[in-house]
Length: 404
Image (cartoon, rainbow, N blue to C red; front, side, top):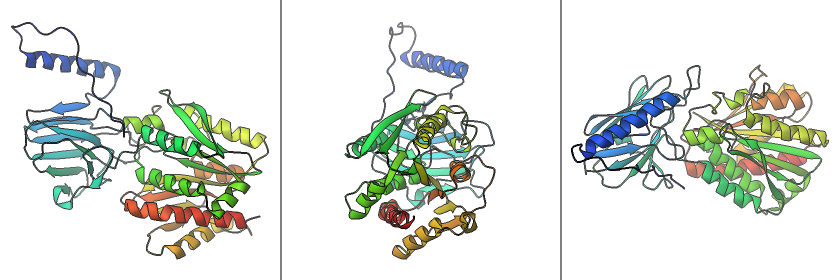
């Protein structure tokens, strides 16, 4: 995983009658002034004689950070935009010790709560859940306190493990090497990042798979990768499925929000999963152009899956009666999957159509097809995600192949 480095200061050294420390403070004050004038966050670091804490890497976000004592750090974590906003309070920062001292970190969430149990990594790649003994959460869940033992090497602390743009690029490049897959740039995000799609050759029917509209929803991203890897495997089932269905994958819809460590929105202040109807944001507009192109080619949509994360794994589907006498795809699919993994906790959660302008409602109202929000719990064991996602993929393929 690539981690960017803070640029070093350049320019002349201070004169002899001004201490280097004072000069450094002046530089930091100037940087803070620039940040304030541009409307950005106050700073991407704080420090004491004990440690430096920064968020200068993709996915990093430490809010406002302050050492209240040399060994106590206070963070104020705020969303990227004013409420209303989903309280998916994201934080991710790197601790670089200067002295071998224990530290106490206190994270206060504004317009949010401690949704995620902190994860830690020494290299930004391999992660583990922080031990229960080192974490406490206030009764109202607005304050998360982390106690760290003495250490001398850097440590990443994050709401969830990092799954950022470089990781997606590497994974999508490996998928694009498949002989049936083409890669296509659909458009650009507000900050100019590519919105990438993986597309198989045209067939009379198409299945759409979308991911990462919401930046913090890591478990949905992990599930999508394992699910898609199964679709492109060399099993007889996968080969038969790809022979019948065209596949369109857009795994990273909100690359700007992921890079910035947002709670929910893109850089336009919009929840992208509420823009399927207005189509005001360039990320969703670029996907809509592809959908229109596929429609004009006479290719019939048959299924849409949109991968997300929430507190408990669940599948938001249409009601059984929404499909008249047709096979209830979602019920059959999830019943079959449950038979193969009765130990995996998930809900089949049918909902009546609502006026919410999300992907699920758009595809159902436009095409009258199964359109499902595939949600994986925030704290589901990562091994269980790797184990169960291929089973969901296999049973999806079987049910789809049985349908007329």
